[in-house]
Image (cartoon, rainbow, N blue to C red):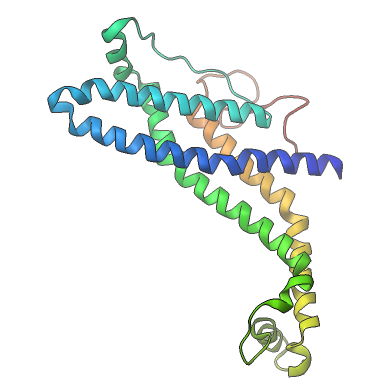
Length: 230
């Protein structure tokens, strides 16, 4: 149990902040990149574009660090040497690795982390809400039919065999939500592990070093003893 809770906490600590980091990266990088393209004819964008790529590289390095803190191992990819002064800055624009950083942080990480964030929060909310529904569900404003959702479900599933008074009772509704809460609670560690693995393996595939040795999963391989396990 303790091990499961530890892994669950680690998965939440990895998944939830990722959305806010990617949101900040998206709203920063996309306008800057658009500005760089729009001002390229004035040479302003020529100098701005490498700066955008360097910022994207910073976010990419943060993504790698988060995978390592979560328990995965990612070898550092090789970037082209920048050189010095203005020539070194312009050389960043010719590095495919930096373009991949930009692509990942804007078009891959942000949409993926919207999905993983919503799924993880929703799953946890249903688990917690179902377990505690009996304590607060009675205070929800209702219409003429006090408990229409559960009552309608029971009548449909039993073809009307359950009496309307029983199907629409608060006790039955609380029991139904309790069962849902238990199911979502029991599956929460597995779901969160899958979500974290999806994020980590996608990040490693895009941002990890090519040609890593040893057993890998899309560029990621577990470390011991901190590696996540099922």
